[in-house]
Length: 368
Image (cartoon, rainbow, N blue to C red):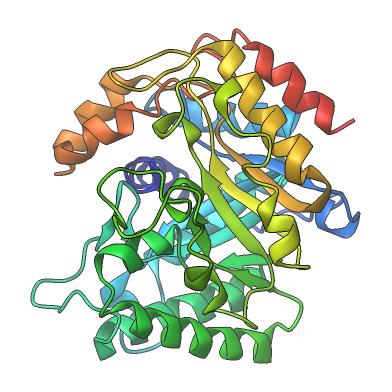
């Protein structure tokens, strides 16, 4: 998913807010939290249409009109946290500002600590020079652990992810995957000791779990779900969370099988979640997309597993200006990821000018 380039830009924009404040503002108290209601939480990544501070303010306001939660996904500030969980941290100040915006719009937060590249789950993101890219590296483990504990102490998230689409990393780095599992288990115990009510998870890419991506897992048949990659985390998964972008596997939303998501219901009795996903409203390259495909995608998830979802994050509320994003990505040295990010620029339930796609009314209807 397009997490890293987006958050890089939003962090820079939110830093402008911090520079205008001599004393950090307090995070407003939520009027109410959806997590206290027992209902499914609906939300988005807060992806602005344009690269501007006003666009960031606008997207939080819009999400507050069409959901009740945002997903905040942050890379690990490796050097800041390799030694300790304490001390002054620019990353924590930035997260603080994002919480202010969320709570000002009566949005709760789901937080994910993400050590991997959001556009290429096969690699780490921004490791310091000379660090070995491995979950067995003591510095990597220490930084992830310390940053996670600091987030828990500062913000006490109700839901905490310790990584995204980790099965993609398992498929391409099978020798290192056990090191991630052991780190997950270690952090799970530490977080529970400090915040027993925090629900902890890691996400799994559903199309890849079903062996629907050509060239991966050639020894497994399509729809032969790689349950072992999920169940290795038990009993330390409080929620079974997936991402799903079926446009990479199906020609239309209507082609999504009627039992595509439902195997999750029988495999676990735990709550489920969709931590990210979407379907484009416009075809691009080899990938399909129409407004009706979005409707079919939403209905497939809702009808098959909606009754068990603790939360559901749709990737973007609105389409975004890919030209503007690509320009900023080139400036920050991430131009190689621009083509991948472009796949998602038309996934929004609204066009860039705010015109709603039919799927937005479907999405809003689920929350009534």
